[in-house]
Image (cartoon, rainbow, N blue to C red; front, side):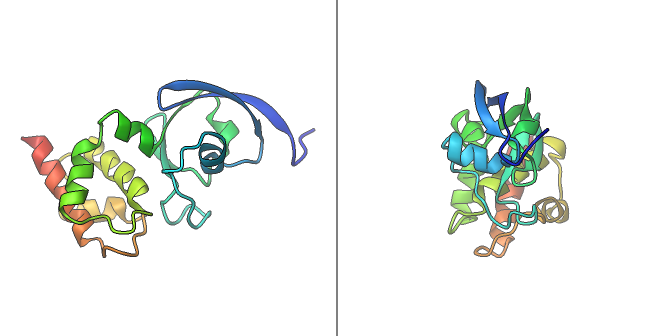
Length: 161
């Protein structure tokens, strides 16, 4: 019988590295990544899956890390902003965000970058309206989104060339 303090051995792949830890069954993925793994690029915002600050990729799909339990990632591939940044996958997006002033306080930026990369992989010909729609689940209180849409649009156009 599971109790609130039940801990189980869990193995998952984080940014290309296999990791086995004893994880409380009720710990969400974002808390595990931040507290146990020291991957603090993924932020904790609303804790209700609404703001997008906790966005990570699991088996190639973006998910809200606050809504997924860490033990649900057993045997799965988890990618954080550190992983896709360190391997260069989003270097062009990061550069465009910098050049277009699409990051200010930086709190939303990791989730926004992962969401933008998700769109780029799924729809490299996305219109400005489609970009806005795709990032609409990620809140930004600083930029007003115009600069973010500009950065994503610029990156998509450059990747198509």
